[in-house]
Length: 258
Image 1 (tube, helix red, strand yellow):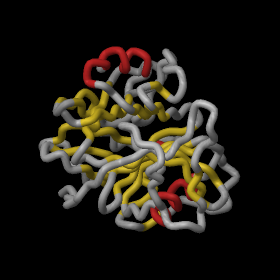
Image 2 (tube, helix red, strand yellow):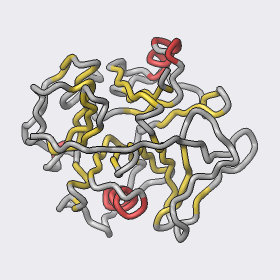
Image 3 (cartoon, helix red, strand yellow):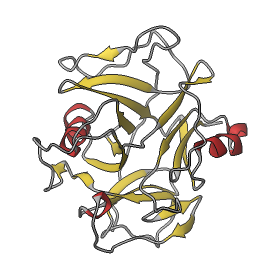
């Protein structure tokens, strides 16, 4: 049984000053705000939380469309979908040495990799792990892998782990004093938006989960990957950095709705 969310989405804005200007950084003591001084089709905000810096892409599914590409190269992806005007891309989860996903993958309604309920070593297997999915009604979901029903109608899905937040509760293995620090990225869902997140400095799982719950007010959040993580986005029609041809895993891709 999946947990359905009834969401109302609002527009998104960019809060980054690039091309010679420093990033606009929201102070951690201030409420989370959107700076309207610079607007583009991306919705990225650079914020500080507990003295750590993150970029957050705040997505409205009313005005934007999230896709999933199975190509492991961001450079290939951006050229394959350029006619759809992609405005952001983020790596979508963990992968094997051959760049195939470790867990479930559904692309445009077609399951290309089955759900992985095995036990093992590594971050993916810090149970519970989970699935980020969008159903055929364009509603987003983050649920534990054991409760995800792959037989229902899903437009896209990607599995990773650990499941950092479940119904507002931290994963039991998260430690606020852990010495395991890495660049990390993830996705979470608040009452109004889907949030793609990447840290700009090494952080703990706990730190990322805290940002999701305490700052973005998400109840469910999923870790996607670390160290190699990338968030590409456009500002004034240009990518924030050159798109790498390095092969990682699958990619979440954001488009404006037509």
